[in-house]
Image 1: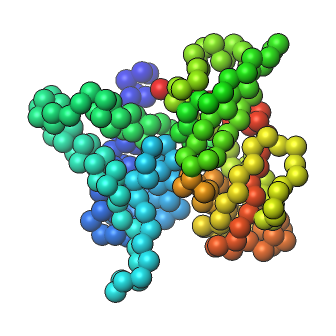
Image 2: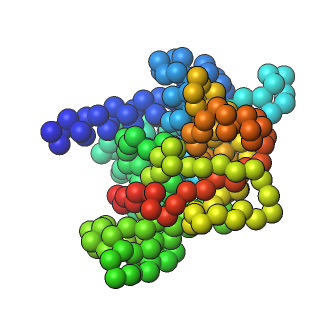
Length: 257
């Protein structure tokens, strides 16, 4: 069973690396998705997850130019693809020849392990533990995300001990899109939910009953929410709309490598 899980993770990683490589070649998400046999939506979901789980963005959108804009790899994205391809060809030789510090190698392989993580949660965030508060039964863990964003999770003390979470340690927070609520932009959102994020709608995909809204947060992370079509219409959501997204501190699930 362990071998089967490892094989699935390796397959997922290869497919995501293939997607990045094709984006680097053609500068188009739709074209890259077709070449690796992914739907446009699935490709975007994979890219959102990879960007959120990487310390630096792997892709970025471009505008203007003769082609009207597109999507390109960042320097971090190009490094990751190059490292993955070199590892595929000759792992042992790659480690000796690369000649980089162990710290930089650890960062590259850390990215690759995170990209191979498979989960049903639409939102995956890489953060650093900035505060831990123990209570009688539960513990409150605060993660510092990209930019100035903070995410708070309430977990049991047993889970805290099992994960070994301490200030300064990296952790991954998983949040289902169905748990995220949206509200119109205002100076300050007055809700009881601990986690509040201000963002800009980047993609809006309407279905028969629900609409998926992907927000770009100030730090660059993407946050997806599933709302009813009625709520989407009431909030007049479209690309570029400023919104608040919020969810309870009990919603995130924390994981460590």
